[in-house]
Image (tube, rainbow, N blue to C red; front, side, top):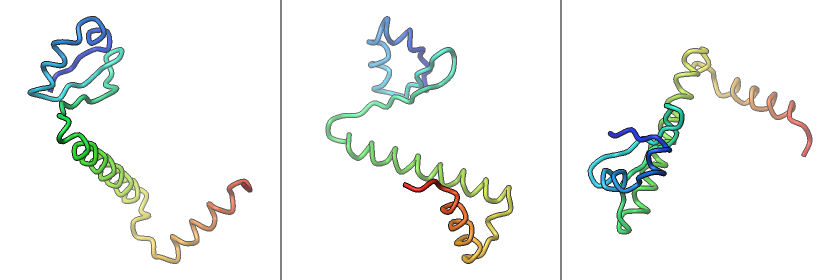
Length: 95
């Protein structure tokens, strides 16, 4: 994995594009990661996008499960969950 600043990619994109043939590139701004660049071909673009989306969704579910475990809410029963949903919905402003 290679790290490249947004300034570097603007000034000289060719080495970054060449690096994408072999590895992922992390784009940074002010030293912080802001994007992950993946090399793709036209043949596998859709499949790659679907896999990335699936991985992001799985990571989100894992974070939610971890948060639930930390709060102890992973032990809630179905009725308690439905009560929480009803309470949250009742607090929302009318649409």
